[in-house]
Amino acid sequence: LTPILVSLVNRDLFAQSLLDEPIPKMIRQAVKMRISALVHQDVDTTQDSQVEQFNPAGHKGVSEAVRLMRSPLKTLDELRELLNLYTEAVIQCGAQLGREQGFLDEQSSGEDDEDDT
Image 1 (tube, rainbow, N blue to C red):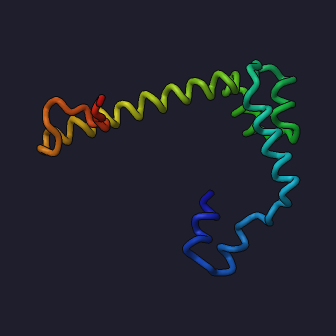
Image 2: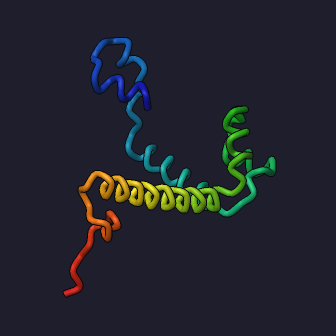
């Protein structure tokens, strides 16, 4: 990601050389479909057979990450729940700050209030 961001603001030859070559659309779509199929499985990725499925190249760091993930589907569910909790906490903190600064009245929750008419 960093090389991509650098290339957006810097046009020198070195920054451009950090970028990968464009991938043909058919190959890119196949890779996306494979990734989607892998991460939507409820399997135990601590087992060697599953690690090999997720990391056919056998890269040590990727293998370690796959083992830590345990179950891709459950990990995605946990991540979604944590993001929802975080979003709610940010909304509540924003509302509290808004009340303290006088931007919101005491009854306001910070979320958009709509009339029930």
